[in-house]
Amino acid sequence: MSDLQDMEKEMNLCADEGGVFHLDTDDEISSKEEETSPEFLALKAEIEKKDQEAQKREEKYRYLLADFENYKKRAQKEQIEQFKFANEKILKEALVVLDDLDRAVSHAKKIDGSEKVIEGLDLVLKQFLSFLNRFGVTPIESLNKSFDPACHQAVGQVERDDLPEGEVVEDVQRGFMLYDRLIRPSFVLIAKKVAT
Image (tube, rainbow, N blue to C red; front, side, top):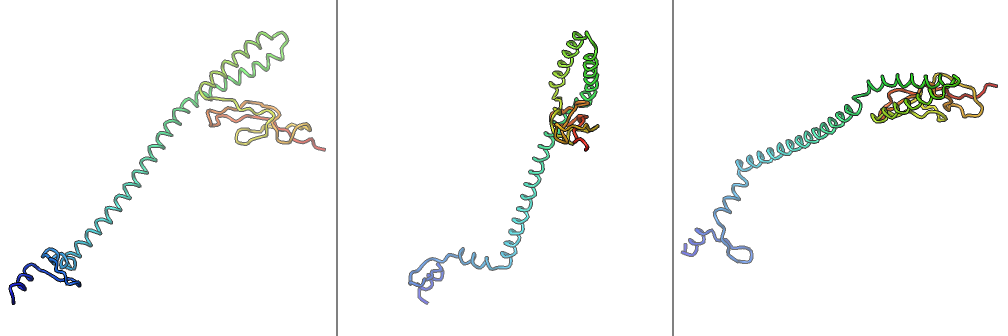
């Protein structure tokens, strides 16, 4: 063998299709051999398995993070609800006093010469309603409206030809809302057609 051939072997010179020589290093040869070796393939499979496990863990983490964010939002909403409706029991009891004031005004109107008493009771009634309103309590407007089972409770019917059937004729006892929650339905009389 010539010195040139020996040198080509030592340097791993290879000719490509065009006859141009390039250096084929031991690293390239060994890396090609390693890529097909069973150890390399086993390591590659292990890395892919670990990548899949990491992806699953990341997905699980994202789900847990989303669940936690939802929990935080629910907890904040519940806190706000608790704060808004903390006084509900006391306010319901205050409605009994309001009912008594309403009755007192109604009875005073039936007595002659009680205009000053009625005026004073009306003023107290307005102040009391204003007080309740500051805490989110609002009366349900029922008169001349259609019966709504979500906020009305019918306690009787009145025969009326001048009104459509199911319209509220009289508010026997006012109903109230605490913000958007019904705390007491309106007790009402509703119109029905006159029987012929």
